[in-house]
Image 1 (cartoon, rainbow over the protein chains, first blue to last red):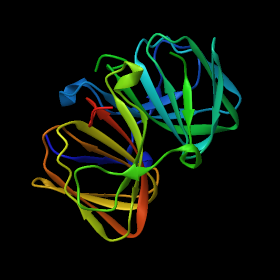
Image 2: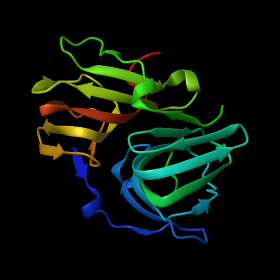
Image 3: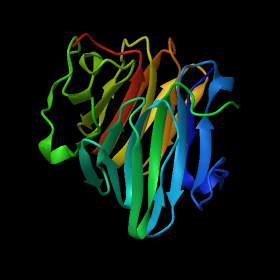
Length: 114
Length: 114
């Protein structure tokens, strides 16, 4: 394996599976690379709520727009350059604000099978 | 554990250990959180080379500036919003361009003990 570089313009987005919504995800690094993490871009439509069913540690880095992540313990709103860390097994609701959002995300372990 | 939100303005940067250089790192999530990943911000000075000795999978998301990561297999240059994935055990040299760089990084496992 060697180093890899990814950009949004080269990424292949597809509708996030198992959800009735319009979030698009581009997986960049997944289990096929042999490592324990998945790296992806996420495109979040404006004013949309998502309740992911993932049971993974999830790091979301906001590149554009703004998201609010709400859990039982509170809420965090993040904009460009900010990071939201969602520990495994934490039920959350993710809300993209009026301009939507573009995120980079890293999960451990993989959030879906390749 | 609950969700956490991080921003550069709140982060505590310190000089990256074990290197004779001027890269500053702010660890945000580490082994004390109980998960297998470390999340950090990195501030890279202009025109500086770093040869990290990490033996971890390393995902670098460029937030500002520009970096070139060089390995035996080639080189990748990344700017804002772009991602460089460095697999474990890959010897690399990281060069920040003339304006330096700000990165968010996720490593698995932890790149240093908390």
